[in-house]
Length: 237
Image (cartoon, rainbow, N blue to C red; front, side, top):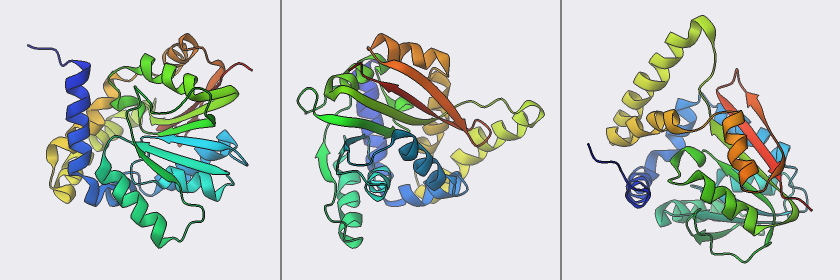
């Protein structure tokens, strides 16, 4: 059995997201029972974006970037490695008549196209489990933050629901891939997305990776019975 290299994983994940652009927003809402909006509001609220220059990594179709603007960010840059996602995000920004709209940049979270200390805040939603090298991603987030700048990451976690865990696993690992595959026409993509959670460090283990990249004052806050969590940290000032 061959082991997938980081480069191969990056190519595979990029191709997958390019294929599911058309139904991406719809499926996010369906699979989260509409809770994705609440999670974005909570993550951006935890970040405290008022007056900040914000980088939204893996912005996708831009919903986290739009939430940052709604909560008072001075400027938002949305980065994604799928141009098709950014094209849809830009179209949505035009329809909403945002002024100023986010800046959209094609880029890789492991090698960001920005100068050191360029942002007050780095945010991301459901990025971490798709990364080929979590440590390198956190080092890049640290690099582009100003001293005293903050990072806030929203992602899924494996909850502890006690006797309800069989129902959770049935839904997350069986029904989500089935419904996602039917609606998107891409069963492989929606089989990958739940499975990717199995390789993501959880809780304190993830905080160790953030600390190793240089972040301090790290912590995490579970949301919705621990289905997702907001991880946060600060670059020392």
